Length: 254
Image (cartoon, rainbow, N blue to C red; front, side, top):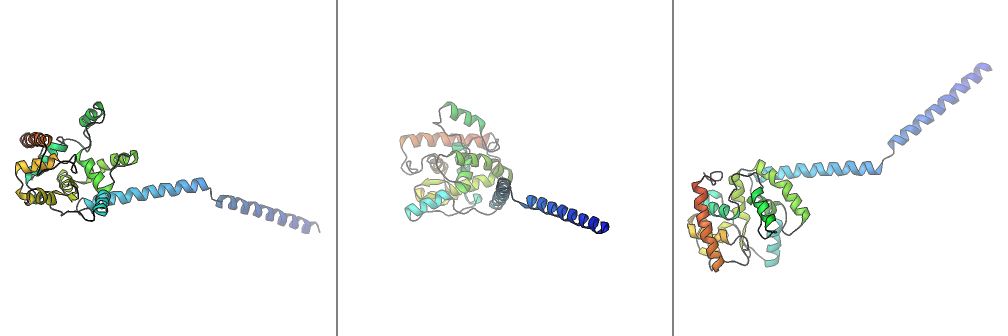
């Protein structure tokens, strides 16, 4: 009888221990919602980073599709003019002109021109400090408009593009996505729209005129320039000649 009682006690104790183990397992299996949400957020962020890097890598070789702004203009106007053209089929002076006009230190910075940014801050934002690379990021991967979110994403993506794209590729994409008039995107459409010539036939003056209207393409005209645009054109022609002479055009020219 004593042996049976002792055996029974061990059995009860074993069951109690098993119950505690099961309870402990249940507690461990119970999901912590905050920890789960954090894990999912990190996984989502990692996926976004990977997809973004993949997109940047692909577009370093493959021509990017229409960006958000271009699609918005197409929806608003019904149609837009745009034909992709390789940089080798564009007059070299056109590339020098846009660099002289928009980002003279393009070949020497890593995506951000700190001197231009400081100047823009000192002038109270009256002058833009965006580089050609930043504008490419905005036009290809993001959207237009003043937004802290967009500017933050632009700041993150700009050095990534500078890392995986050549300077020549950046200029090529810029010339194909820039807006030169309402509904006129890219240098191919702009050269024919304003001057009736192919982009490889652009003269120094015509190239400078196209570059001159880039800050306000829907307000300024390359074929019917205002006094300001004429003055700006002369400055761009001088700038294009200068960056060619001092080597600041070497990074995007053959």
